[in-house]
Structure formats: structure tokens, C-alpha cells
Length: 368
Image (spheres, rainbow, N blue to C red):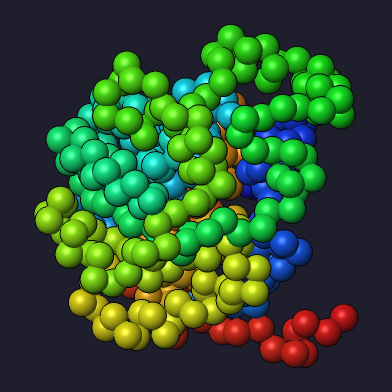
């Protein structure tokens, strides 16, 4: 039975070859930031409420003038075609079915126009990496604007890729040349291997404007290795603003440590979230990701003051487990958990959550 996101993780681990699962599941270096995200959320408790009218619970929120069915979204994740063919499109459809936003990664394997066509009325944002050749970013932004993406998310925490030791041990890089151990692993995962063979090697198809033009293997390898433009600074935003006049989000308003995949000594996102919320002081929405595994985790972020939380790995676990339906199941599970949490807290609307609902764990509670 799939009763929590961890169940989808276990199913994904069974279905995927090791190098693919490790790419999805792994973090940087000792993976302490990855575990720190979850521990920081575990350290927060929510205060229950009683004798409150919770016959009707409203999880919906309004962001940039548009209504979301719940304060949750799918964060940008790259190379989804490695998990399942057409992964970007399947995830976009699942998000649309659940009434939540989907953020398409620059490192996606489906043309952004195709993703938009798969869910034309849904909330979709475009995530942007700026590589050394800024013309790549410029054509991406132009196309995203023309296709109707509602917001642009600029990732600024990847001037260089984190040291992802699982990937290095598995020899996972482009061009990918599997060794004997990986070949044996592929044979032991025939369902994945046959589907991958039928679909062909996924490529980073949005790096070129012309759909019929080949993408340089060197540029694709650079994107996988996250070789970005390290000259990108605050003043560079004026260049981007000239290209994009819609909502523009940076990491900061999206509070993130890249799911523990970059700086392994970075703090947990939920640990710094209160300071960022206070600094923004209501002038803009603030979103958060990294480490969210339960609907109650989302409630904790909302209580701190976040507008919504985004998930990455749980959506990919759902994709690996059951394709579009698996992603929908993950989102439905988190939504049901969030609704149950609000009822038990005596809070009929997500917007009513506040820091008065939070209680940090004490040393006594942590003792055996």
C-alpha cells in the first residue's frame, strides 16, 4: 500500500537502475544538508486545536492573481526522461489535474512548447539556468513567454555543480558509458530498460530554438555538470528583465538549498525561512522547497509564513512508480495529509496558519 511518500520512494528504488535512482535520490558530498532539511522539519511541532468548526476546509490560495487548489507545487527537476519517457509532460499533466503549478526545468527532456500544450490552461512556470552562452537563456525566455508560461524562476545557487558522489561512483556523466556493473543493473531492471531503449536517450532539447537543430554534446554535458555563467550578478537582472516582463522569482523568494544537492554545509531551508519571511515583510510571496515529505511539513512552512511549498523528489518517486497517475497519487496524498493536519489543528483554512501554531521540539521530547 502507498500510504506515504516513502512508499513511493521504495517503489522507485525497485523499479529504477541504481544510477538513475541515485541521480534522483542523492545529495552533495556527505548528504548532510539533505538529511538536515528533514530533521529541521521534524524538530517543529504543530499545536492541535479543538472545538473548532472544520466542517469545510479550504486549502486554496491565490498567487499572482491566479487560484491554486492547494499551497503546493512541483519544483523544477531535470532529466525526468531518465526516470520515465515523456516525464516532463506526465508531471505537467498530473500537476494540472491536481490544480497546482508545475515548474519546467531548463534541463528538461521535452520541448517547452509540448509541455505547455499538454496542459494549456494550467499554472506553469519556467525555470532558467544561465550558461556561459547567454543566447541559450535568451531563446528559452522568448519561447517561454510566447508559449504562455506565467512566471520565470531564475536559479542562482548553481555557479558550479555540487559534488554528487553517488553520481561520480556510478560514472554518471555525458556521454554516458556504462560499465559492467551498470550493464548488469540494466539487465536486472528489464521494464525500465525496455522503455528507455524504445524512447531513446533523453536529451536537453530546450537548449536550441529550432526543434530540428542538433544540440551540441558539449553543451548538454555542461548542463548536466551545471557549468553555469559565474559572471551572473545582481546587475545582470536588468538584462533578464528586458526579456521577461512577467513575475520573476529568484532563489531567495524561492527559499531553497537545491534539495541538498549543492552546498552540503548549507542550512536547512525551514531554519532560515522565518528570517526571509520577516525581511520580505509581505511585499512579495515567499515559496520554499527541500525536504518536504508530508502534508504536515507543508503546514509547518505555511505556519512560518511561506505562501506555498514545492516538492521535487516525491514527484519523481511517483513518476517512477506509476507515471502520470503516480505523480497524481503523490500530490493527492500530500493534499489529504495537509487537510487532515488542518482539521486536527482546528484551522479550516490554510491562510489562517501562523507562528502561534508552531512549537519547537524540546530536549526533553528528544530524550528516550
